[in-house]
Image (tube, rainbow over all chains, first blue to last red; front, side, top):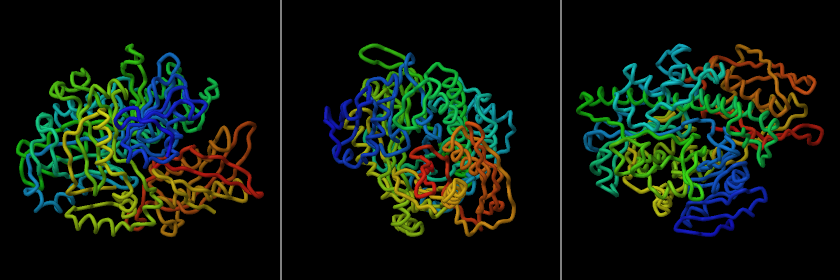
Length: 480
Length: 139
């Protein structure tokens, strides 16, 4: 166990002395049970982030934190615009990997008799799996439009509804994207993959509302009763984002030498904010952010079509309203209070969710009273959650909270312990319907490979950086 | 030769080669084996690659990334690799050829998608007259 001091409920601090290069302390938001499950390597990575130039207040680890490369996954770090840096490793390869949630007017008993047909239809209509190609054929200039306009591009072409846009972080379109900063290779990878789910932990889930903790807040989001059916989509920017991150890690390797930045780990390569290298990366990264918003928007449209064909009902009858869409891997410029004064900082969220409070002007009007919806995906056998953002998150974690359960078991070990078919049979014995492109992915993503999502969510709720609203359990899963 | 090590979130492996070339070839083999069983991939077509790196590490990274790029954009999968590494002043050049075939989902039964090749823990070292490094893949 690491030498951390509990300074508040589910809040721990590891002082600067833990590593000599640390400029700020490391903060961990976790219950006692959870902090004991976080590997030592993850703390080292969190401490390494605390060594980066211009970091403000503290390097933050959330209860889902685990060992990544460079930055821990489940981490937040904010940098001053004057002497801080931006790091592609602090965003990750899957730029704007994120989640969206839809409500339906259906109940569990409406869906159960048709569940198999529904999951099969979703699996067929939404391409998934390794190197999956979409049904869309977009030109190079259309890809540029996607990079600039994000989900708006999709809605203008009939993929979804105008009102969807209001319910997406940044309204599905981040300003400042510039596709001329994106390499030809990234575009070649991105073009055929728009409208695909991908592989690994990405999924499309038909969920039932299992428990509502705060009925008033839940009802504002259209989550009305236990047994109601919701749909969750978890995917990102596909090969487009992966290649952009990869390209800029090489660019920034030279920037590190050029600007003489000292790094405790090469995967933390960074460029000073305001430098040409940083500006170019941001313009490219935002292009991938928009691509991912667009990807989830296109998939949403196909989810709606699938429901309509299976239940032979029109959109109005089925609901399928977008609750919200949040990014889990992103860096953004936001105003936060540091040492009592407001300042603009560059917030890196790597495996973390924005958690803005009631009253924030950055969230949809309908949610100003309750705070921003925070969506926490579980994985196959485990629960997912809807939370809301809080004032305390604004004060303590640069308006951020956790993003999932966080792995505890390596993929290699999970594969040695489980077979895909065995995982499938186990979940099916609980009444779930699973369609996956790869049995290996099923074994790697076995629920036991993750921390207990209930305890992770309890941590952020206790610490006050977001508040529990509802818990969902999966009925049907389509995976890559 | 290569062996897979435990890493919580991603895929980490150690690879050895008696020459730099062999190290690069085995590293490619290991990476592709994460995506597909190599014995399911027949040698039908080949692609030539040529790339640069400012150091050996970058060259290895760029080589593996190029293969991921080819898998996605050429819709091919590979099982045989041959490279030549040339020192060019301060930089390094790689000329290589890879053999495989077009992806056939039924035949190849892909396992996991590799998102990217990271630099994390990558250190190319001389060990017992050969070379060794670790490679961490983001998946």
